[in-house]
Every structure is written in C-alpha cells, then in structure tokens.
Image (cartoon, rainbow, N blue to C red; front, side, top):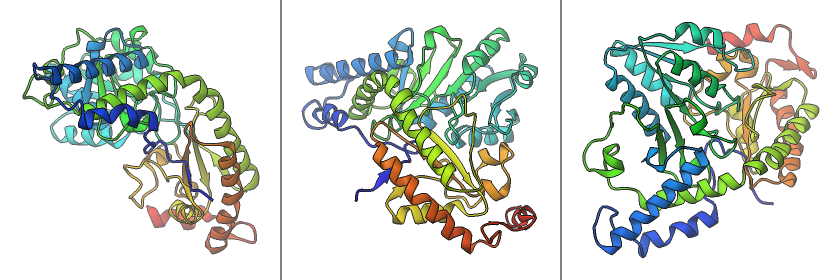
Length: 402
C-alpha cells in the first residue's frame, strides 16, 4: 500500500513534465545568460520564456514586472524593505496577525528599528475587518502586506478590494500569494496590487526559486545589489534550471485552475465530510464559503496534533499541524489562536492540503484511518473519558500552554 501525501501547502512534488523541461539546462544549455555568446543567448531566451509564462499565470501587464528570486521569503522581504527604503518618511506598516512567518518575523524586527506595525485581527473564521483596515490607512503607512490566502486554513482575503483602498490612500500594497497562485485565478493588471510574491515549490516546481511581481512605474529599491541581473533589481547569477521549471509549472498551473476548483475541491470536501461525520468533537476551520479549494484545517478536540501526525505517519499518511515553517514549535498555531480556537482544539489541529495528484481512493483511505487514531489518543487523554470530554476540560488544558 503506497503512502499518501496531503501536505502540499508545505511543498509539492516536482511534476515529471517539469523535470524533463529542466534537464537540458543542467548539461546541454548551461551557459550564463549574461554572456554574449550563443551558449548564453539560448539560456537567456529560456529565462525570457519563463518570465512570459509567469506573467500569464499572474495576469500581469508585462513580463518586465516579473523578478526572479530564490524563494517566497526573499520576495516578501524585498517588497517590504523596498517600500520603506523608497519612503523613509513613512514609519508604519499594516499586516495581519495570521501572516506567514516570512512577513511576521520581518515586521517584528522592523519594530525594533522604530517602525509601527499594525496587525489586523481576524474573527473566528479567519476573516478581517475592512472597517479596521480603513481606519489604519494614512500617509504615514509605507506598505500594506496582506496574504492572498492563508496557508493554514485556506481562507481567502479580499486583497483586490484592500489594494483599491490602499491605492486611494496613496499607500503601496503587497500580497503574499504563495498559496493562492495556481489554485485560484489571478489577474493583476485588473487590480491595484503593487507587489506580489510566489514560490516555485508550492506549485510543483523545484525549491529554491520564487518571484516578486513589481508593477511598472512603482518606486523600487533592490535588496540584493551587485550585477545587472533582473534589470538591476535582483543581483546574482540566475538559477536557470529552476527558473525554467517555474515557468513550465506556471503554464501547467494555469491550465489546471478549473481542475483545482472542481476535482480537487471535491476531494477536499469529501475528506472533510467523511472525517467530521465519523469523528465526534471535531470541526473545520476557516471561511468555509471563501477559501482555497485544496485546503482542509480540521481541529480534533482534547488530543495533541503532534501525536495524531505520528500515528498518521505510521499508516503512511502525511499532513501537518500548520505551517511547515512553524510546526517545530510546541505552541499551538498562531493562526488558530488568533481565530479564538480554544486550546482544547487548537493543539489538535491538522492541516490536510491536497493537489491534483491525490485521488478519491486516497481520500477514502484517510477517512478510514483517522477515526481509530483519534479514538486511541482520546483513550490516553486526561481530558476525555467514557466517550466524551471530561467536565471543564478547558480549565485543565489552558495552564499547560499558557
């Protein structure tokens, strides 16, 4: 029986078709794209092709708006640091409490440098208040950075509307679209979004490559300085093989968006239905009416998420307890806590994230395997007895993680 991978929001398998596209650039087309000879010219054309493929996936106006980076984190950091360097008189940043650590950690650091960071709160479904957001926009704000979709719950934020509001206030707007790209339709030329980040390994391209979209005409300051690569906006010899892979991944993703929102969504919905019907005291997190089609965040009350994952792994099922960049922590997910999920459930939250490679047979197997795992762990839990929660389990649970 083969293993089942449902942790695609952490990283994805590189599509074999993408591997084939990349292979010649290891051994045959290995020139430096900055070189003037034919070896370099051929590789330069390949990069240009990839830039065009990504432009089409993002619905950007021009391929010159695409800057290749090493990852989504670099793209995020470049966007925020560029905005504050281009506008040194502006000392405020707006983001949310549920952003990826790539944004939150940088904002924490910038606070030590004297910047004021406004973190928008979310409700119990992970949604933000546009009223709160509007109240914070001013000519003191250097940049707004709001993720397009949350990596743990899949909740989609109204970034087009928020970008429009920021534009009206004369404020730069950046969105981390690492989870959204390739799963939902993006048409940047129809928006007021100034900068956007994506990462290759979240859409079946290799690790170590990302993109920062920068709208034409925007004041921009590079983070990496040196050579003339990327029109002087990101120095360093290009990671050609991975760039070629990301371009092909963008092309394939564009052709599969309908599949993601029908077939993959149907798998996700069946997974949630099957688990919640079979397991008592569990529930689905996030905005159930407005989220990514592949993501299911399910809280199992009164047990530990890490224990669930270990037992799932023993039967060949891979998922996660939240962001792969924070799952090493023993603390509950910052996203779950921001949504007000009780400790009794926040610590037992599992994220299942599917891809076009998952099947209904795999979903049915997961639905079969999860109930006995949960039952076994609850028998060992001091917060569960006689098939139900003990009296006042929250009072016993909270001090452990306070």
